[in-house]
Every structure is written in structure tokens, then in C-alpha cells.
Image (cartoon, rainbow, N blue to C red; front, top):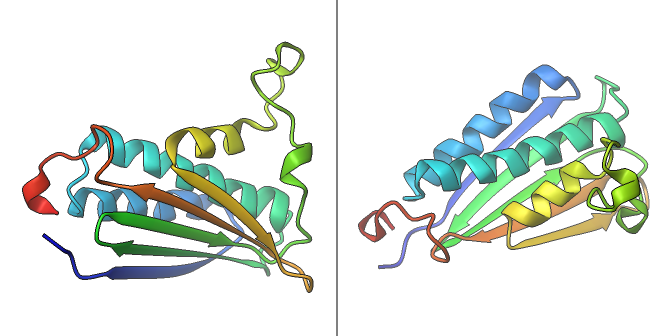
Length: 151
């Protein structure tokens, strides 16, 4: 059965207190799409890391800068876009948290989690500033569906 598309957009100021709000929206959308509690939790964790990175590394905790989150659900495909207003970064230069020399470092874990929990993670950089992260998840794959009748 094909689903109508759903789209949720939220803009927050760059405060760590706002991360949970965006995570809750992600998890609620996943549960409404029929994903089980575990699947919804892991997608929520990926969103939490993405928003934390946008606030801390993108906007450098500048509360005047915003973070935008857009959730688009089409059929079985969930697309999550997180955008900041910062200067950007090179994702290839982020330390690999699995490298033995980096095991005690905290940097790089967020991107690792996003890549682990999502099917695809892509960055784009606006020449005038700002980074957009797009994460996608096929909700029909794997064991995350609580019941195919909900989709």
C-alpha cells in the first residue's frame, strides 16, 4: 500500500536544550510510520547527533543562528535534512572513532552513529555559509517495522 507523503519542518535556535525536541519529533514520526520502538530510537539518535553537531560545530553555539530540521516521509522512504548557518567543515577530516588511537576521543562519534543507523548520509555546503546534512532511511528494510499493515 502506498502512503501519502508527510512533511514536518522545525527551526530552532542553537541551544542544546532544543535537541530533544527535534529527536522526539523524529521518533514520533517513525512510530506513526510503523517502525518499532528500537528502530525509532536509533533514527532518533542519528537525528540527535546531527542536531548537536549543527549547534556545536556548525553554529558554534551562537544562539542567533538557527538550525532547520525537515522530515519528509514518502512511501517507505524517510528523508531527514538538518541545516545550520555555520562555516562548514570537511567530513573526510573527522577522526575515525574506531581507529585504536582515537578510542578515547569523543570527536567523530556522531557522524559514525549517523552512518551506522541510517542508509545514507550526505553533506552539502552553501558557498555563502551553512551546511546541510541529508540522511535517508528505507523503513521497509530490516527488522524495524512493527507491522507492515501500518505502512
